[in-house]
Image 1 (cartoon, rainbow, N blue to C red):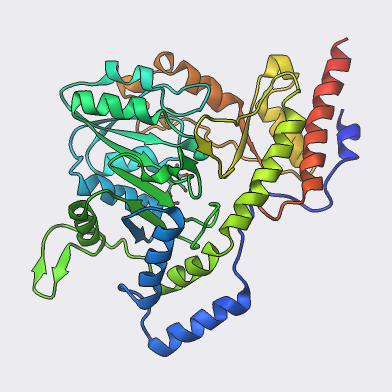
Image 2 (cartoon, protein in one colour):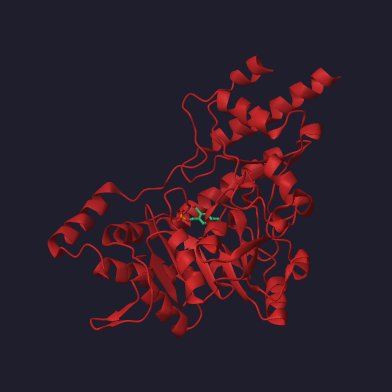
Amino acid sequence: MKRSILDLKLKEPVFVTSPSLPKFEDYTKCLEQIWQSKHLTNDGPFLKKFELSLGQYLGVERISPFCNGAIALLVALQALRIQNCEVITTPFTFPATPHVLDWNGATPVFCDIDPKTLNIDASKIAPLITPRTRAILAVHVYGFPCAIEEIQAIADTYGLQVIYDAAHTFGAKYKGRALCDYGDIGMLSFHATKLFSTIEGGALVSHSDAVRQRIAYLRNFGIANADTVVGPGINGKMNEFEAAYGLLMLNQMDDEIRKRNALADRYRELLSGIAGITVFGGFEGLTPNDAYFPILIDAEKFGVGRNELFALLAECNVNTRKYFYPLCSHYPCYSALPSASAQLLPVAERVAEQVLCLPLFGTLPMETVDTISEIIKRIAEEHASKGQ
Ligand SMILES: Cc1ncc(COP(=O)(O)O)c(C=O)c1O
């Protein structure tokens, strides 16, 4: 098998993502302005402009930029006073999601996921609610939409708040509205590995002036004015260098998303017929951003398992990622929780063993998508022919 796929080995390594960058000359012009003004951080002119343009681009009314997504999420929970309680969440996510709960003294209560969206399974939330439950912290993983209406109905019935870790959703829309704009607060990440980046960065989308104001206080040490500190805030500010970078990046986003949509469509076309491979797409109401391209590998039907496919692709210079493995419920800090039991999370357990994210970014050549798909197809065919 190896010799045949090695014929397709890429000349240079390809990684799961590669950041889209602004033009260097454009960024140096911004740097000159920052140097002249000596306004490096603390609500400077680039941040003000970025905040406005970001809100306009996403079509959201209230957005608050942050130094990164994790601190933004930490502040979201503080802003809504979700502390010392239980919060229902997904185990199939990046470590930051449950960690911000722990840092707020809240216990994560893991809920299984829906095999169709890989997001929290709304039909399994209600039985997990106790008198200590205050909120649902759901994740629109890979930019795929959660069951937004069902989750909101549960929250309304039981008097819970809904926070979305919308780290992956930049540019994605659900029913014509930004996916990050649902729930009580939505969090975006602008980390360098994300579709839209400010190098490090993030934002919170909120829905009332009072919550937005509270977020602003908490992001800046709780400082209200020169004489008043209203609460125990933290430093979550975005600086001028990141804001200027983000401002330039916004101009490139339509193009970046268009290219990703075309590349993801090609992957779907080439991979969807292969036995044992599951691809995702066509979610009702979603205008996709194609932030990631996850596939599931059923070892029995495909012939080799996820870990073997990961290694074979790496030999061909195709570097994939096992997002999100291991499950958060397996981390030593959470594995003793009653809700972390593997028997309660059968779908998440299976998906974490089967998932692999393939390279996807705007500058990835279409021919590389063809080659990666061909390698995967050949692995399937050669295994099938061996079995005959
Ligand atoms: C689902 C999810 N939540 C939270 C984060 C944390 O964001 P940041 O890296 O900007 O702190 C990330 C990403 O890195 C993520 O993927």
